[in-house]
Length: 630
Image (cartoon, rainbow, N blue to C red):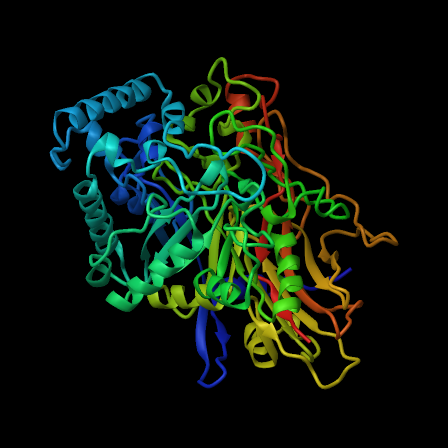
């Protein structure tokens, strides 16, 4: 077991680390925490589900730590720990339309009597859905129709049943432009370089046949460039390649820069990380290069479940089944089946195998977390969770009578997640640069501070050094990087890992290194290594540890930090390294068990326990991988 004195914790929180670029002098860096995936009342599904007032301004004020009014229960609410950066990422499809319809906007084009009657009927249905709390069912009317038969998706959809349908609501360009102008202006107003960063973005919500292929698009540029375009939506194309082409064309036309972040691969029906493109075509080097150019990072955890892996995909991983979410987006979508194309760790392995064949890895991405909250409130704290949708914000509305066991509601969702970046400063440019180089990591909510480096030779005691990060950069590569082969064929890579608990949250259970590799035959493999842990536990012959235990009082939803450890600092060398095998490595840090939001609500309602979902949760962090290519 790895043990050390705890004298460095305060130092690690208080001082910056030092990052060394290849061809320039040392630049101080710091970890910043934020959310790249938050919806306001401009998103059609957020508005239909009772967020009528939490606009982008509300979202930024909440993120900065100011008290705001909850859009559904009208209570005064406030985040426990403010964020360092935020992206308000409303859906491009029907942007601002529901809000404009409800408020009687005069921005809709007059398409004649018949079109006006159709729009009036749609407005009546929408208002009835809002008033009767059936917004999700109304939303389902605008989802693409499932394609019959076998084979790949055909996202060429019937325009009479497509998100953003102008035949029902008329020409919505003016409405979308007004909403986008306000989103951009609000981001500009709240951006405070060095203190708080607002990145401009939106969500491209491709959902052919109910398969979640959504991407968050982010730009580091401001209003001067952002006002030269309107967000590209899935009503323009359901294909990711067309999104990338639009990004390239818009970048060339305006100078605006972009990246896209896939999310909720766990409900992609086997298409997010497939062995072919969405059109069913074999992945080529050109496709792989374009995908990685535009999508350098992926979202691994959020409110609608965790996308790392599952026990059926990683049977030797005892922590694989974390916040499983088995509900497709469309109402009534059942028959959930997890595949390797839906989850991050299998995708990372698949990327190695594809790269071995075509020379380019299409799934070589860094990892972040974010919330995907539609309440306008980025709430990733279990004891301060204000719902995925606004209506899930109170115990009584969460426990709606008549809800089926298959219902998507607050009980089967946890408060997750957070994006962490190691950046030179808290500015748009620096945070965007960290995303591009993948020096980022995910947490399921707590602000754990984690750094990971890989190299061929670190100084003895580097893991305990005051200049831990400086040593890591000088002698190795950080998370998100590539470890170049060494000339010494018998040498295995060594990893420097430091993880420190959130000062307001639970202690740490263990630190793990997760390795995936592809052998000479193309077969995929993985292994989980426990590299540090709390207490006096001993690993068995299979490398497993006894459980850390739990201090959670199930009658009060309280816990204590009498178990666990505040910090881990590790120097670990791969004992099974084969220099001929392509591989990736990432760290996973686990907290001790703490109360999950469902336990708080169940106790408040005087229930025996949550109707769905566990009572406790082991929060965690995932670093971006480091890759080795022979």
